[in-house]
Image (cartoon, rainbow, N blue to C red; front, side):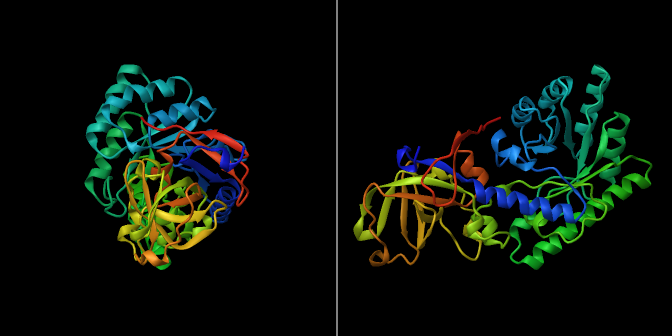
Amino acid sequence: MQLSDLETPALLLDVPTMDANIARMRAHLRALGVGFRPHVKTAKSADVVRRFFDGGTGPITVSTLKEAEAFADQGCTDILYAVGIAPNKLAHAARLRARGVDLTVLVDNVEIAGALAAQARAQGAALPALIEIDSDGHRAGVAPESADLLAVGRALHAAGSLAGVMTHAGASYDCRSVAAIRAMAEQERSRTVRAAARLRDAGLPCPVVSVGSSPTATYAERLDGVTEVRAGVFVFFDLVMAGIGVCRVEDLALSVLTTVIGHQRERGWLVTDAGWMALSRDRGTASQPVDQGYGLVCDAAGALLPDIVMTGANQEHGILAHRSGDPARMPMLPVGTLLRILPNHACATGAQHDRYHAVRGASPEIEAVWPRFSGW
């Protein structure tokens, strides 16, 4: 099958670029002497995840219990569910444990810790949990110096569930220099290690110290006291990551194949058949120094078309224009021309599709079709 055989829009995955991204991250973390638990929420595909482990099966991080189920079906048994568990998911988590999955969940409050304790008493089996640490004020978690940390720790320990601590430095996405990302990586490490030390000083076990985001994992210079690192979007990268200097545009492995279906010549627009239903509505580069619209435009072989941007998106239509807005500078490519769009957010774009079309660089040949899943 060739690219020209596809109905568009279609999700393309450049396998050599992806493999290089994985190899670079693995080598970096190996040099720092720390374990790697990649986040598979970006990939949502067994064919992709096998590339993380040279055909192995883990350990992995997931963001939904559906992901945990799907990857357990593929033989992955060491799984961290890295979103604060809701009470209505505890029974599902227990079923995964009962089928032999070494599932660990995430907690940041005594209410959920109490629910875990009640379930352990009722079922006679504890559900291992990590305490989420707020290392950057970005989202969820308990502060490493707070009384809540010890309260949650004691409640989990009483339930036989306390397995350690974890954090996600989501604020790293707002950094604007490599130096700032390195500083955030050290903040992430030091605050989480400090939380672990406070638990141990209080006589509580803390075997796992888990940190990670793709920016901090890429630029961490030391990981003393950390047992594992999690990262996910690095496998494909995207324009948000390129915009903060975590990768080059050439490192983006994911793109959406689209077709020119019309022109608005007086406006300098090409109209394509890939709108926000194919790319997502993520405009993550809008707050960065360079706004990439809904994505950068490449030819069918993956070569960037200078200053051509997907500036607008309706549900099924994409609008391509010159970055300057000058209609005279926009090439009116013929109807039927195939193009690739590089996305702002690989996770959100991937979620719009049910399969990857695996390609190699500029080759028009599709070497494989890999299924992916979505939803909860």
